[in-house]
Amino acid sequence: MSRTRDGVETVRVELGERGYPIHIGAGVLGRGDLLRPHLRGRQVAIVSNEVVAPLYLETLRQAIGEGRQVDVFLMADGERHKNLETYGALMDFLLEHRHNRTTTLVALGGGVVGDLTGFAAATFQRGVDFVQVPTTLLAQVDSSVGGKTAVNHPRGKNMIGAFYQPRCVLADTTVFDTLPDREYRAGLAEVVKYGVIRDAAFFDWLETRAGALGARDAGALARAVRRSCEIKAEVVAADEREGGLRAILNYGHTFGHAIETLTGYERYLHGEAVAIGMVMAADLSVRQGWLPAGEAGRIRALLETLGLPVTPPALAGDAMVAAMGLDKKVLDGRLRLVLAEALGRVIVTEDVDAQALGRTLAAGEALCRG
Image: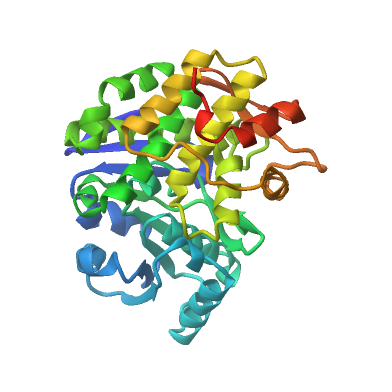
């Protein structure tokens, strides 16, 4: 669970010597007292993009303080740039600036920046420290926590990566003030996911506070971020490398990743694709006879209320199945899906009826309609 001190809530990911804090609160991005203890060498490489850097780079520089070599690598914005080409450019940058094994990489940005920076940290000189400073809601509640790092391959999302934990996460809730509405709402999809997979009472609360969350109410957001991080920290601590329980965090993602891949990472933001994927997973759960139709309808309704897409694009069913078959959750050629049994409880299963899956893939606008 979390603890509060000086207006900052801290959730700890308990992984023994690899454990680390998630500091949540207004202004933590500029808190040098929270950041500097995790900078063990004199070199720092900040990785950001051309959208985020003008907003927060100087504040982060001031938090790092004097007396260190600080170099800044800016990548292009967007999921399609989370690839081996950008990874190679970052490696070139680190070598050109003579960074060594004591350097710390600092990811200043959303999930794309965090994923790529983490993978670079895991592989540069066989592993260097890194810190996550997530600047989107989605990154704060999901991708910055848990140590999944990766780049995309043209044939599949996050196919090249490593499990590699950060030294700490600084989740500054004031960054939401500058987040475009579409990016903000995409992050709410991952918040809803935590209620579906682990905490029915949290899902109930999200339903009652949907209006406040849509309006970016500071109090509602602080609670949503904290509870999401608590749930993810609990799951990661129990299963760091996704040998079992951690797979539940992928609810909606097998469908969502397939949609992203088939649309070239350009039509949907990650959270938008996940929102559609969660509705598809709920629909299939009903068709399997596991989830009451009314609860599936509540999932769809909440996502719609939060301004998220819930209808999949017109993609051929066989193309979806093929793309889903490339998902990292496939084992020995068998597709595994995370499906719901009730709000707050999901399972990872290979027991998927092919005809039911086909009907879900063909349902379109009718998904989760009573």
